[in-house]
Image (tube, rainbow, N blue to C red):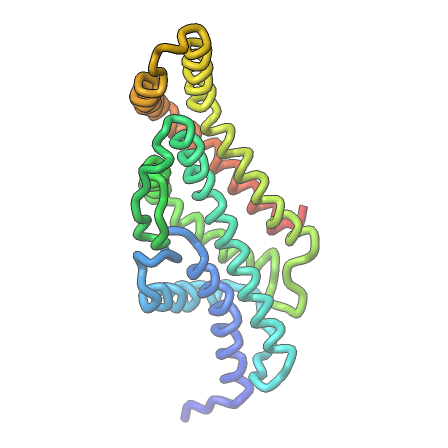
Length: 259
């Protein structure tokens, strides 16, 4: 007869539930899967599947007691860790969105916005174009497998316990916002610089010949030149993606290691 004790059932539940909270919160915040394009039911099925596959490979889990206050603290810690890791991937994607916003504003396309189906908010058309390209590259280069590897490796670095993210880790998450702005500026700097020179030239022309309608001439010229510059920049977009993605993964590695 197959006898199962209550202690064994508690161990099985703990081995599955503790990782599930972290994995499920990660998939709720991560790009591609955390948006409105993927339903919550699919995300839950994916979280359950990955947790069931990786649970035997994870370190030993603490016992699960639903009525204990410490259990709720551990649950909150796991949700915070999973959400923080998903947020770091969101920062990586938003670098290209912000860079496209800077370029579009400089070339006069800041008003041309489309609805982002993933987030349900209006986004500048050029930013949506860059975001689509990044998503295609991310999937083509097995970025989705990297996301799964990150969340699984996090259990070795940050095991399930009362202690979760430390103060240096939280500080690095906050600093990731400044890195997002600096990386987006470096990405948009060539196009912004070229368009700035053009705008300065039109400014000098307007001072030299005030009778000319510089606005009627400069606006379409700046827009066409901006489209040409973006077309030229597409040749080096893969190198920019590889450089920014490498830095983002190193940043996540430093976050998990507490460096």
